[in-house]
Length: 295
Image (cartoon, rainbow, N blue to C red; front, side):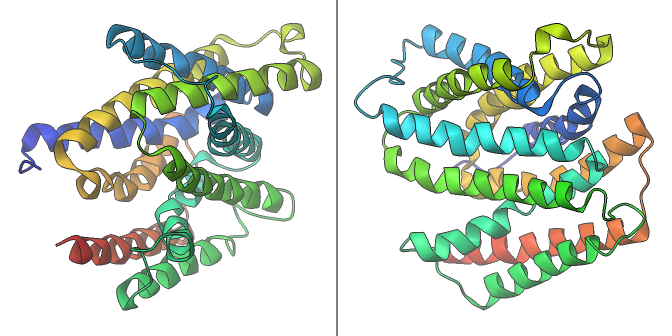
């Protein structure tokens, strides 16, 4: 991989901001849309730039090939369930909390990687990182100003959603030899097919009169953080590698807190800041251990 230059770091920061912006936009979208509808519109609009790219590059989409069951399963676990759970949870908690809770995915993936892969076992640094990171999350749940008996379950569901991302990532290893564009397009198609009947059955969104802000937010969620961000991620990953791209994990919760404050005037308590610091430090130890292994 080439040495990262200023442009690479600008693109990495842009990717972090885009993904972080999803949280406050989900919050705005929940004012008019149900969580199932938000999840459906995200995958529907998110599939557009990906499928256009596949058409432009003449990449065959294998959503209904002999491996259709893998695409369907990954779409369900990696998109349908977490998108629904996150939207459901964010309705009751601040978006900045969701950003911190979702940032635990590198920690969860390290735990699953230990049990389901051959070359990602625990070591001292990883163990310390996981303990520090999740200690920060436990401490965050002690913030009675922002998390109480009324939204405790919502915060837990967001954590479950982040774990689904990790499980979906592990399942993707089953079809890792296929092109990323093909896999992403295929799972987006299956997620759309799964969510559409569920949305119609459970939420009947055509009976709503959504606000302009909510409508703009949900379209943005699909096209930018779900679709365009994936294309940007792939560009960074291809040029600079996984270790460089994984640094977004540090930046997403930071930008998530900043954007939540700017656009929604969300409260930032000292426990939020301490929890954020613990999660970032935990991720640092885990990433540092991975770097040493690769070197």
